[in-house]
Length: 296
Image 1 (cartoon, rainbow, N blue to C red):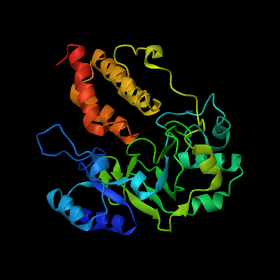
Image 2: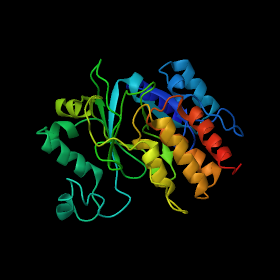
Image 3: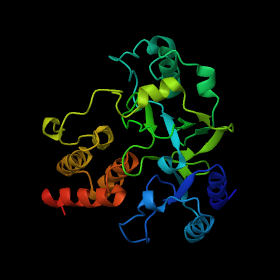
């Protein structure tokens, strides 16, 4: 099936969609050789004519699903990138059951049961398997409630909802990244977000400890991880994201990470968690940081 067909299928589900770069998670570039991308929060639409225009212009574009206008709350269960990722946390006991690598779905199930939720109901909703073999659980979020942007378990069970100017977004079914395709795992109606999940993930609920302010960040040593800097941006609290992005970009520069790599990774992270100004503002901040460090 063509990507435009997947985009129209998402529209039929009530999703607001926008084009994302081929094989990537980044909002689509306005022109092949330009650094600027779509302002995805403004580009997201259910208008049939605009969708046809987007995918006629960019037929290989992945499908971005904007959660806020779609009324969605997506629980993103991933597979940890390292062994024993839960060690030292309240989830450490899960390693005794599942071994050194724990699927995010198992952590999500444990969380549901901890809050005395009904796992069979939480599980029985529209689900998409991601390219990295994670799983997106789609729910309808209650009108008038603002969701937190804090992860349930950082890097293992993350959330995308309606916080910030544009909310967050996920790749929809039919999208393909370098890690693989996004496919429907369970083609069921989208269930209302369970009450325990709403209570846990409201904006005024502390899901985890807030990130330290930029002045408290530990400067990584030379050769520091770009993934770690991405985590800093994703974990920054609302109102502090731009500072975290600037710090992460300057740190990336100091660690010899190429500008283009930092632009893609950090801007995508900032945009995905609903940073003010989105991807375009993030790109400007990263470029500014590299200029400040004298590497451009």
